[in-house]
Image 1 (spheres, rainbow, N blue to C red):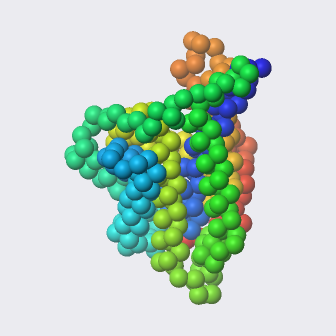
Image 2: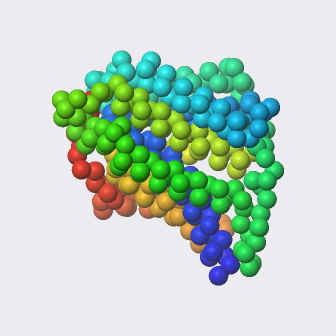
Length: 294
């Protein structure tokens, strides 16, 4: 029972991280039909910002990192994606890859390829026990903060004028523009929110790994993208569901696979994803509309 509870906690923690990143990817895709693989570099920028901003108190350090990532996200939208907004999905995808490659190599050129050590606060590494179960404070923070952000974003989308405009744009962008929704403002708001989510994900990754490198965001974004596809492209609830499902399945496979084949866990994970997509190619939750291209 102790092992089951421990695995459940690990699954919630990993699923929360994937859900957080997948939500940022799905938010942009829902409005622009853009798969933003440069989201990994937003995470990288947030991680390096946390490392470089060492003098201020922790909360100021986190706030500064979030502000830096949001500024980069808005600049990314204005400089790279706005000029190709009406282009084909293939053009948007190539632009996304090119931007990701450029930012990653720019980080290597400026900061070097060697990972930098980082420790935000020793308190996050501390653990406490409930019965025979050992729980890290970081695990609790990841799960609680992710739930707060998901609930807050849901409230923002449901109850604020900008949130309603973003939902309308995700459902039918052309009709939303005819009804007076300003495209530039809505898309900029979506990129700003994705930047906040990327910065929070960077905080979790830095706290978990204790180091920062140019590729810190690549693997999490890859898994989050798969979670977005599994949940249903363009569906925000689907992205969250896919993130938690992928995290849970990953932990379960790690626990049940024999030791000799445990290094091949991801192969079994992706095999299960392929089977799921064969059975339900549209994803777990189908968005209301597919016409969201700007």
